[in-house]
Structure formats: structure tokens, C-alpha cells
Image 1 (cartoon, rainbow, N blue to C red):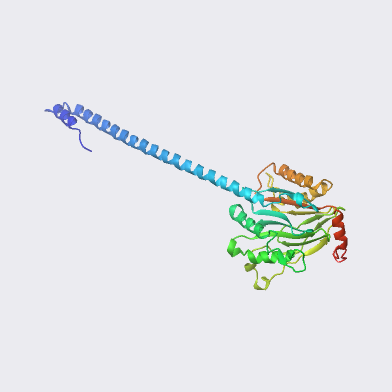
Image 2: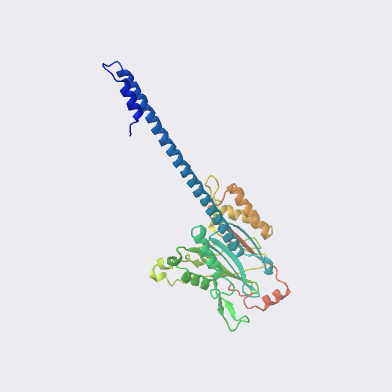
Amino acid sequence: MPTDPSIIEHVRALQGPGHRNAELIKQVIESWAARRDFEAGHQLLRSLVLKYADAEKNLYRLNRELVDRQRRLDEDLAAAAEIQSSLLPQDTSAFEQLEIAWAFEPSTHIAGDIFNVIRLDASCFAAYALDVSGHGVPAAMVAVSVCQNLQPGSALIRTPDRMSTSGHSPRSPAEVLRALDLEYPFERFSNFFTIVYLLIDTAAGTLTCSNAGHPQPLILRNGGALQRLKRGGPVIGLRSLRPKADRKFVFSEETVRLTPGDRVLLYTDGLTEYQNAAGELFGSTRFLARLEALRERPLADMVEAVRLSLREFGGGAKPADDMTLLGIEVKEPGAAGKEKMEASPRAFDPGL
């Protein structure tokens, strides 16, 4: 540190014979040193304040950029949620032989659950509900991809048929699941999914269903019985992880009769695994009890009442997993529908 020339001159002026000014010289030097320390500390403090101000400006800028990015991300996710929502059943009045109601609550902006009801011809309808592993964008992308592959014109669910007036006939649910298992290997998508896929033929009065690791569909009979549909196979996507002998696995399916007033209920495990603040699950027992208690209500009222029961049970807490409930009720057929049912050889098949 350079020495102040004035302090040197001052010390020289105090110096003389003897030591009478030694104490005074000491005080002068100490005062000078203290002033220099104060100036150095002040300079350091000023430098730190300036650096802090710069850091604060940079932090403010970075925070603003982060907020802007989050806003854009939220907007993109909201737009993606709108697109995904547009893939769910919309104008259900088009299904005059069926009544449809559903409740759906994703755990995030976009969901790994998706479901739909599709008209394949005048009296045949396909319905499905699927649940992709994981959450967020990766799961939602797989869900949307599967949904696109299950559109009415897709070769995945229809096969050429010269005998049909439309030139096509529906693939069986077991065939559809087999095709999905080949189309969505885990190595390609890093996800697997469960799905239940079914065909309802309102002319024949039948339902054919196959299930890939999904919660078992329920039929709430008009007469009061509750029936589970159990046939199917493993989850979709893990074919390569199965033993080689099982990789050509053929999914099984079952066909049951449907009569007017019967209700078919598809749901995902996010519903039964919904937890309240105490960590208690809503559970299958409580779910089935609610269905039994609500069986006399119109389908839409029943589905909404189940949704409200879930919210009440969980205290309105956001679910940890997507929750889906899809209800389909067979209506009384009109005159044309009755004529077709009477003409159908499958309508009175005693083997169903």
C-alpha cells in the first residue's frame, strides 16, 4: 500500500532529540493506519454493493425469463390439454342406441388416461379406456398416439370384408389388443399401458370384450346383478420382456348378452386408488357400493354422483393419478332396431 507523503512530513516534524514526541508519533501513525483501514473497508464495501446490485439485476432478469418460460409452458400444456380433451367423446347424441356419460380428472395438465366410444357401423360400436404408465407429456403422447390408431377408419380396428355393405368389418377386441401389443413395444416408447377394448352390437344384443391388464370392466344389469368381464391378457408393450414362448400370446375375449337398461362401466385404477389426507384408498369396495346405491339414477347422474363421492372422500385434493369413469347404457331400440335384432341370428344364440 503506498504511503501518504503528508503523514511522512508530519512524523518528521514531530521527531527531535529524546523521546518526548514518541507517544504522539505513535498516535499519529495509528490514526493514519485506522483511516487507511477505514478507506480500504469502505472501498471494499462499495465494490461488494456494486457487485450485489449487478447480481440482483441478473437474478431479476433470470427470474423474469424463468417466469416467461413457465408461462409459455403453461400455455402450451393448456393447449395440449384442449387437444387431448377434443379426443374424448363429444356429441354423444349421435349414438342413438346408447347413452354415454363420463367423468375425467387428470392429475396434471395432460393425462396418460384416454377413452372413447366409436361408431363402426349402423349397430356396432367400439369403446375403450386405457391408462399409460407414468404421467405428464410422455404418457400423454403415447395415449394420444393410441387414440389416433383407434379411429374408425384405422386398419387396426377394421378389416376388409367383401360381404359387408361398408366393405369392412370390425376386428375382434382380441385382435385389436394383439395388434397394439405389436405396435407399441416398450423399447420404442419407454412406456407400457393397460387397456380394455370392447364391441357392442346393438342389433345382436351382444358385447365382446378383451382386457390387457386393465381394471375389469363391469356390467350393471338392469335386473340388479353386477358382472365382471375377466378375459384378456397382459399389459401392452412388454412383449419383448416376456419369455419367448409367450411372445405369440393370443389375447382371449368373451361375449355376453346385453339387454336394454344394462350399463357397462369402464374405469382406470386412479379412481379406486385415490387417497384422502389420511392415506386411505377410495378402494373397489367403496366404489362398487356407490354403484349399487346409485343404480336407479339416470346414467349421467350416477357418474356425476360417483365423481362427487370421490371429491368428498379426498377433501377435494388433487389426485396423484388420472381418474376416468366411462358409463355406457343400452337404450330401448326403436322400431328399425327391433326389426334388425329379430333378423340377427346372434340375437338368440343360446351359447352367449
